[in-house]
Length: 351
Ligand code: GLY
Image (tube, rainbow, N blue to C red; front, side):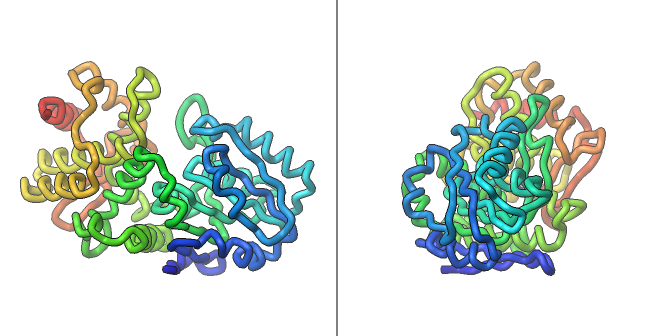
């Protein structure tokens, strides 16, 4: 088992990575002093529920499957059910699931009784390397994803690599897309070597990088934004798919977004061909897509994608990207619309 601390002073906590990590939940819940727990999960992970034991009396709250669960309506329903079950300020919420569940349950925990302890048992690869760690919680509005949320750090995160065995193929791709961004982050970026590590070490390596960014900049006023490498186009592709059809998972979109970011950085003279090739090599090592989906090609689609990108949370009324450069990956404001459109056109010509 690998233990990675997230250093946040009095709110520090451990992320435990390894096969069987789920079995440590009872010990972690005991550490919070909770006498009851509310276990929030989705039907899709119900197969593991029999093996989840918080070590205190608990009730299970199953929310609907998929991203639809991340709504204000679900938060209200959950909080009302927490209240009806007698969950006290000193008790704990345990999220068992992927990013949807940890985002939702973490947000409900942060507002119920003005904040109760939350622990995450991350059951997806994406959750283990990103969503379950760092305290960003939230739900969607019809107007946009994650528009309502809070920073509420969990008290412990358990990343059980054994649980990943039952993940559907596309869920693996989704997690690997998020993993791929870490290949370019940190003081000595690992590149394609990350894909060659054993799974437990791979997850722990990503968790260490994430923990370092979160410790340095919990509220994302600086360095933490780099964790969004590849995400500006990814979010636009997801929004476009939501609006007009297309079948793209977050991690797949991030993979395409990483290639786009590399090509845009090259267009802006920040990196050379060799570095673009390194991006492609990482994606190939993780067996991820790199091409713009066919339904997103063409000048009209490009204009729409740029409109979505201009609304990105990082953007301060301009086009803002996380881009590679001589000194590594950094936030770049004020990118010209023409350069973004030209980069999309370049991608659209690739097969
Ligand atoms: N997923 C990016 C972050 O937690 O900051």
